[in-house]
Length: 165
Image: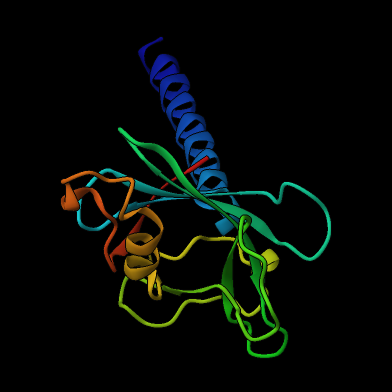
């Protein structure tokens, strides 16, 4: 009786651990279009990716939110043909062919380039992201709206993968 209970308990634990490992493997898969990054400066900003809001050339939507200020920016995410650079296009700005938006680069935990060549085909969000010139972009967009509290402005920060949606 004790041996039978032990065997049943051992098999049950093994089945649970296999189920947990399967669930873990499924949750490890988080494409960029479902990821949430937090600012490395710890100021309460989040970079939130989601599937594109409309069909067409855009691969995702990205918003920058703040825990007290709400949504600050909403971008369409696109990718260059060829090399695969990823760009954030402000939905409120009309772009000419020369103006490409904000360039975003991704890096792994060893700070090696992890920008995917094909954004929709990646299965795991890179650990870090950097948006080129975001600090000055934010400064000029919001300098008249943020009164006396320059610490609440975004800076050229590193974004750290936080969780999957």
